[in-house]
Image (cartoon, rainbow, N blue to C red; front, top):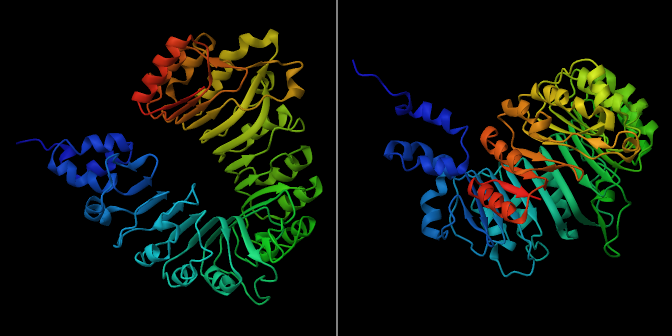
Length: 481
């Protein structure tokens, strides 16, 4: 009885393909016709078209004929300064991202309404630096998209004649992301308007928020008050309406947004406001506190430790080493932690880490001159984070550097080889006080097969540096130094 090769089954090939990068998928196309038919939709699933870099997945010229023959595979399309505008639909496209770095280009895509009209299946649209001041059809076209759920605008201007259509579009959205968006004065949403479908809201350089009672994820950068572009236009803050600073904290405490679980804040928040917000949230899953993390906010956050998935606490000296160590010991669901410095002695004297699901860690481990022999033990702790994908040695805080001037050195003689089991590593970054040698970089290529980016100072001569750059480039890995 003949044996069946599992890879002859399309279902098995698809499972294997999920773990492959784009260059590997392209190689799989050449195995045989059955593999070609299985893998081709995955290669064309997401297409990036950049005028300066060519097209991906292929660097060949993206002619209308090539695009037309593969358009039914494309679900996500990224366009950067694209000079072409093809008059046909992408029947399965769900997400469209258009970005113009050269706003003076004569690209027809800078007026995107005709292109969007062809693609009624769109769920997500991101527009950046698009000329919409004379594109009167844009909002009418967006309004008629039956499945649009996410809209992101960057460096955008909304005209007075279009404001009613814009608010009407928002009523059906689940996610609204605004960055550097200007509104005409006096065009806030009607008092009776309620955006019940919005779950995710992002407002940059703003002072207010819309009436979104079901909000779950809120990003609010309010470092500055509204900047007036002209006598009749303002940034997106006043146009959205709502509470400012301390008033927002009080509204959270009154449970105005009972589903709010993710929050990113930036601006003139007091420590009291921050604690009031955390205590008012029924559950905290993701929170970015920037530089407002202290012993008081740590205490307010403690009851959320079991649910906490992402935490960014800034790098101010108030973020003590013991607070960060306690977070590593008390947050079992944590997947992302961005902080300042942790003293090695606090790690080794403290409880074992329970955050074994960590995928993104940015922390600087510090030693005194007499403690450098402890570096291998820190690598032993890090080696237990087998799901880690992004590792950064973080920023050393000057407050700690006086007594603990030595950061963790990612060298083989210090115990780097203990991290050979971190096979999911995608990006690795070291601080200014550390460097990597030739042996460490070659070791990473051998053990971290998923590696895509390394950013570090190199302790090698110029000739070796060029050799390493070429080696990493041949593997499709960015080497920044």
